[in-house]
Image (cartoon, rainbow, N blue to C red; front, side):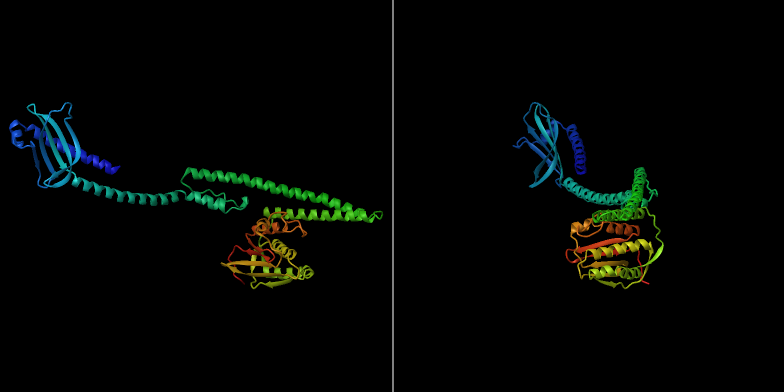
Length: 420
């Protein structure tokens, strides 16, 4: 809009200048001057006068009288002055003098005005681009500065929180009342979630614990029944089957209790753990199972280091992974345990040559009661327990697998650890 406004102002200024020249001309006009201006024997009956540089001209013409003819108006038109065509801003004034009609035209050249307007438009365009660029950069940095508390809330209170217990209730420093309100509401919401989460885990723990008592009583009654010599073989088999069912139920409850206690952070994590020692002892403990399936167990660990955690839970974690590798391995297969450093992070990998898993199975292997194959014994809680223990120690479990080629479980530790 600015060039248009500039053009309007310029035209207004030219119009005022032309009106002043018209007034001076009319005020000094008389019949003698008209006769001097318009030569009678000139067939055009027109007088014209122009400046040396053709920037202005004055033209007086005799015209027939017209009814309701506008006295003064302004037009932009081209005129040929001494063979040169230029554009002018022209004041046209119709008047009568001595009952004769005349038309007075006073023109001012627009060439310089057009050049100046072009320069102004070009300058405005450059200034506009600069302003837009500066505004964009300023807005970007300013908005980033304004939203810094928001990103901090997202990063520290949402993205990094996997458990309600790990939520940071420290108020975020923010100049905006909206962000302070958002932080306050998030704290309140997380408190409610943590309370409900705690009640749910406590409920599971209580129910699981209470179920152990009737299971123990039923098992004792079944054991007493087996002492009765009057029972036939069929009854003994049924009672023995019921006892196996109770043992399986007791094992499931104990595993659920273990998961609940891990998630409730009821274990200390301040013991020094040596993984090479754990793997070596576990190989000896599982030798019978390995020999039953003729599986070759290779311990290729090269680093002996210590890790702060709960030794019992870490033993259960590795035990469940190796048992899983034995269970789903092929006869005369192999299991390879190796370690190393990846981006300065220590890792332990357990690789088997078993049946493997597809993408859909990999997505749910850590779900509770999820089983890869219905042909295998188990309750589907081993990997769920392993995942809970890993989360408790901030260990990442990565799994890669191919059908009929085997599976690799990699434990990636959070700390930068150097070998002893």
